[in-house]
Length: 320
Image (cartoon, rainbow, N blue to C red; front, side, top):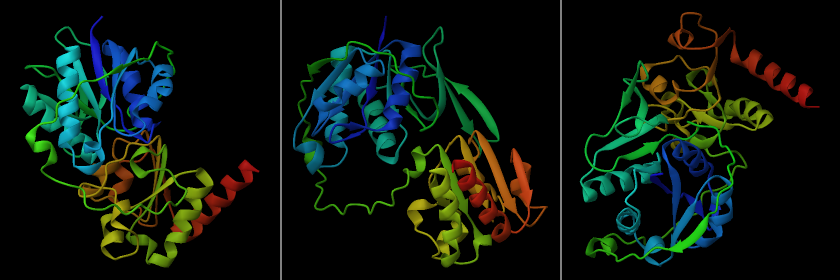
């Protein structure tokens, strides 16, 4: 059976959820071979094996931490030469898409970004994408070279499928470009205790209707009761009510959770572009003509200052 390379997104050996989703998708196409790089790479093996990796190619070097994405591209190119894979799958983060694009150029292959599903085809993997702000669903395949595909988080349920997970060393020779852009410093992101926005199964977002930074506490309370991430519309972040890192939309982050709750968000096309692939969408807005209601599975016409606290209370009561 053909082998499929999966780039491992991990932090000091702790594998992040999008990688486990990729392993689930990779099993539809062939035998997953994981590529883990940097500090703690060997510590990823047990989690990767538990979710279907037949092999784990590892390599650690200071270049992965000291420089930007090129060393990782060099390593994936080496892995392609070692494995001759049927496809290369990469998490669809900002860094992941840059790595994938550079790799595709290096190996002379086509690339598909932001896939939301994958299936095996007679002529190679077929990727499903949402196009034009999710107004259309397309199916595409790469017609030249080894397909390089980035997949959005929450596109597949994580499924355990124990495999050998044999650890093998990956031989990597860094290119001259690998040390071209040096990382000069890092500032740890302050932890909120909430899930990462793009990976969260539930997202609760607030918009212009929240009417002030102090009122986002209402949105946060509902999110915390559900174990959700907090998002915001562009209007809210431009007003300074919430950090830009939490912006959902065309110029922010794209999310695809199981449940998306939009509170006080009108539903402009720019916002819809970032959340329209959510599995279930709930909107709370006092304007019954708001465009968001054309998109939702469930809509509540009402003042969010009345509805959201009641919803939070009900969630907490059911949990109790």
